[in-house]
Length: 285
Image (cartoon, one colour):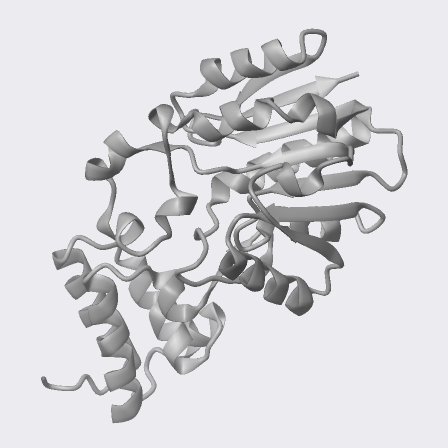
């Protein structure tokens, strides 16, 4: 292959190649920044610079891997969440911007409804640790515990906690089981909620590269919410807040589960920035 002489030529060629292969053009810029170890501003300032052979070979290898489905985040090794850099790999779900909205709403509800100056927060199915670590960083006085059924996921979350300086208690086990005998002021979770029947319509970069145990659930994606409902009343303090991320068709079903578990509580579904039902909250006062 003829090697482009300038950085902007490599970027243009990669963008076109990704577009031809059904991928987002923007990934080319991210992978080029990663290859050249430049910020976005640094890349823009360097577009007319020469690109050496080694850098181009490394860059094009990443472009081809992404064109074949490998997520950009697995190629760079990280994803941004709530303004922080989180390590990601094939053992954990790649953080989504919708989950930032769950965190944002939870922080507001804590300020309004939880008088405790050092609230206890539990993150169920923590994955890479984004919810637990972000809550701790945004509320340094809080005491945060995170659970996951996957030891590999917890290892990744632990690395992120160390990297970001967040003091989190990590516990291995299924959903709320590791918290037996304990109550929390706040319980948050982004559990697997995709129905197996939806797999065919999903992008190959998701279903072929992200852990299925973090994506899919039985009962049309509702199984883990149902499972959590058995323990939530025993695990939540009063006043207490629950926040669950959901699939866009699951709002009514999850609301009804919470209403049954907490008949006196205020329960509501909240849409994400794309106007899809994405979160259900329970305020138990």
